[in-house]
Image 1: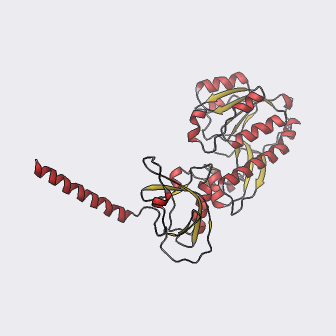
Image 2: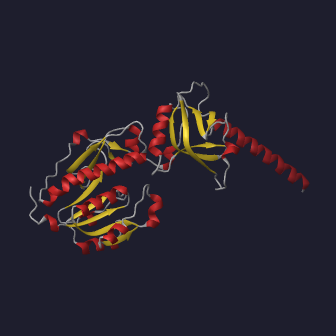
Image 3: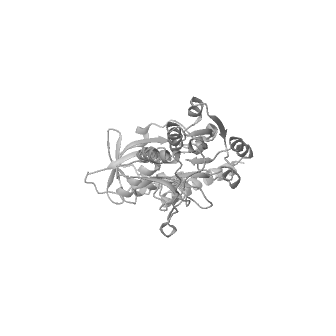
Length: 341
């Protein structure tokens, strides 16, 4: 179908909080779309968002009305969007679900974004899952409906993912795919072309939620699987992690090892130029970029805890025995104090 309204005058509002939001806004402005308002997640809330990006400066540079929010569905946000009277409402890179009251405002439709080949892989944490599974992705813009990532598709631009890619590499590929997608689609939109294509529900699949605690490494798994976890949990995510002597060891980068060692999974076999050679359930990994944090935030000298032969992680039976021993020692001390009374 063809839009009846002059497409160059379509009022557009965008809401977002990450790199994909920024690139989308930049592309809308590059193609001289009529962006009348920008909703940006407050910087105070940024600690809860991996890869947070502020949209305030771009809006200011182009003299676009900007509104900070904590919760997208707050009544003041809804009223602000109503004053902008958008024809199209873009929601890109926002983890908060948008309520019906807000979605009812735009006269033509609400446009969402997902970096997978919809209807495949709808749902949560697509950046981490794409990186971990090494699946091809796609910059997909679609019409938002009542189901998760299931609305008709407006444009879809594929991209590939390599075995070497970390989450940050995939983020860059997503942003480049967004650029290609919008360079293709926005000129058509300006001509009034509007051809949403329904998704094939028989081919739908879903990604489940991932949390920071899912970055915990199980050293009994293979080197290949462990490397994928490290890649997926790396920046802008909180990082894959393990423990060493009651301290947290966060691992940002690693690589496959060709060394011929046989040993116990999780044991540090070799240290070379601050790189740690660690045994897994099958194969070895070099940990090439890592940091140590203590539970009480004290500064930890790596040389005091990271040594050849040290084991990474906790082992329940050993920890239970250690706790029992401490409890016995404390009980003995209490008994002595009671006898002195």
